[in-house]
Length: 158
Picture 1: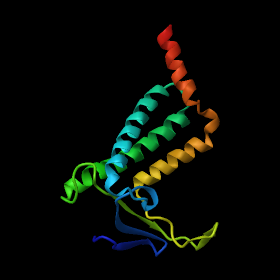
Picture 2 (picture 1 turned 120 degrees about the vertical axis):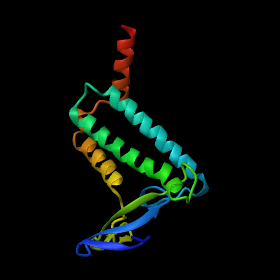
Picture 3 (picture 1 turned 180 degrees about the vertical axis):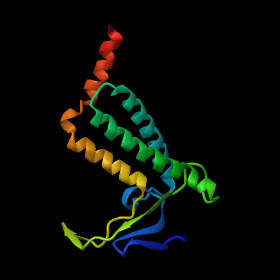
Picture 4 (picture 1 turned 90 degrees about the horizontal axis):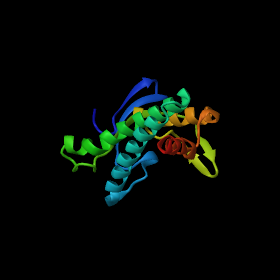
């Protein structure tokens, strides 16, 4: 499949379309500062691993949401770090993320902006979105950051 090519999955409503995203969500670009985005992704992923370890005894919804977000973050990070190296297009940490799911939606006009299609995304993006939705739906089961880390301090002081 060549860059920009599409395969219909459910008519023209859902397509597999091969694109490369050099930036982040919605094509926001970082240009030459792309290394900052890649390093932020590494730090955020490490924090999510640490946080997931800290919430071991908390709600399963919290753990599920964070774990799914972590899976998506790591998936995009792998693309961002290695994709350019693998195809000989960019050095380590300067790669692109492959997006491929295209969903056609009816035209939507919100606050003067006209949307004619949903942004093309990938499985990792879906994981991040689903994880955030889980956290929002079950937010009454989610402790604050200070509560999670305060509990750790209390354990260390005993």
